[in-house]
Image (cartoon, rainbow, N blue to C red; front, side):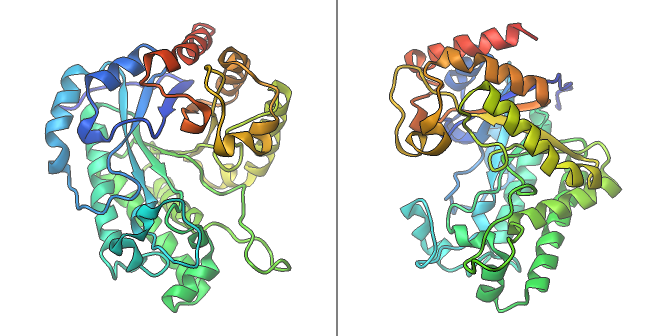
Length: 357
């Protein structure tokens, strides 16, 4: 049985690596989300470094259980990292990238030579079917190249595969159209919530004199949008803002300036792709635990915000500016949404912003 639903905007989504995988997500996770100001939660269908094979049948039992007890939307969360290879000379975040599965892939498995693209297609189909069965508005897609950040560059992937850059760009777009086609067949009015799209954040290659390149993953997203425009007019593709807006702001005024500048950068893609919508994000801290790692650097480290309650005006501003807002509950921010004590200040802040709408 498929639930019927309607999406009320602005919509607030929880995204966190504290969230258990779909196979283990149950009452405790649902209760944590229900008690906060979230409308839904992104739940990893598989891990970013998972190498097992999956199909819808793998998750059918959990779908049935969640259908019986879910009071909030559960968004299956999938990762492009599944078909991105590991390179010892590249940049990766985890030793998990070094699994033989990823070490075998050169650049990106664009032609399914190593079976990784086919595995991702299976996961993609399963995520869409699960979202539809759960009555969730859609799925969350994380395009990050955790295995090798060099894979963002078309020139790098072309070199690894022995193809021209033109061939790689065309193949990436073709993959995007295929993902769009699958979504159109399984769940034509789904929301595909990207954590970022790369449209407003071109990447700089190793040659300092060369022009910045468009992300490889952005070509995939373009293909998806091309398909949606022609064949699935109700499909929504959200660019979440991880790259173009960022997780942190120095102040409310700083956030407003970021939103305005981002809007200018997205004028062309928003005009070109009618299915594309902008979403916003922020990663709050100040629940009592000290910031660590990347949270102590850059804008996050320089921010004037101190307490969880300080983020209320910023979350309200995001909800005023965007229909889709996701909160990144980061370990580096000391925010564990499933820890009653650690999450309490954030839940209070989010409920306050919910009451303002």
